[in-house]
Length: 422
Image (cartoon, rainbow, N blue to C red; front, top):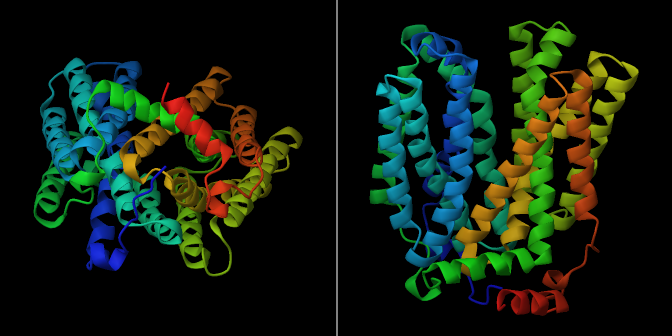
């Protein structure tokens, strides 16, 4: 539990706008590096003389090492500060992107993607840890909501940007652009980002200390509850992204342009709800109330998707239900991340990294389970509904009022410390 007070945002960083842009750019590395080259996959397969599976391995390898690298850099940043590990990660990402751009075979491309993913994970986890270092409470939730402008726009805009690049150049230009972005952000961090974790707040390095930190997190039932709730809601969106192309274009006959419009509309809903959340939280409702409301809307949307699939209710019911499910992901991620990390300022890097790992693990499992049943409407509906409902159930497992609201140490916190000491 964090007992060291966090300095006010005004004292820590007067140029808040610049910090939002920088951390927002860092937080988009995941969607940029996974979604921007999706339109180029067929051409990549032809040029590299491989099949669909070979190209898919470049995505699978990236996602796996992107999640694992967050565990490494999260703990390292808790011990050595945020700025140094972030610069190392950005340098690795830039080198990996260059290697992707010049890879002559699919095998070397997969290896380069592993290097790229390892560096990208650092930017994702450390950007969230920096927010926790600099903010707390409602202010932290508002800042995470603002970052949703970037993280939410990434999956929507990245494929469009990649498609435009392919009009004038080859697929290698996508990775060349990512290398340029990595180099620019490396310079920006080196020259414009101050260290947010002072030496007196850093945790001791070493594997034993890291295992104890993760034990502390796993034993914190409040942390686990919010991480699972946000990860399950994220997985509902992940299932939608995975299956929507086939369902909307094949089952309902939408053209690629119409599908892009629907996809973009849902992405806009996510961004809009994230910004509304930032305006409302702390003024008209507290974080926990908004979290319950958002997950209730998401669960209702998930049920709507399932009912539409079972009873063949048509496209309109499906689109409205999908919009309700996807739009609330913005406030859920912002509020859930803030509440999960509220008591872990001294190990914010590890807390952010474990959350990232769980999100991708559950999301990948949901997509894999959906794929096992084939790219059908019912399979997607079951995955979306199950994840959305499970997210709400997890949140409601414990009473809304907790020791964090009471402002005192509870039996839960004592059990957490006892567990971590084992």
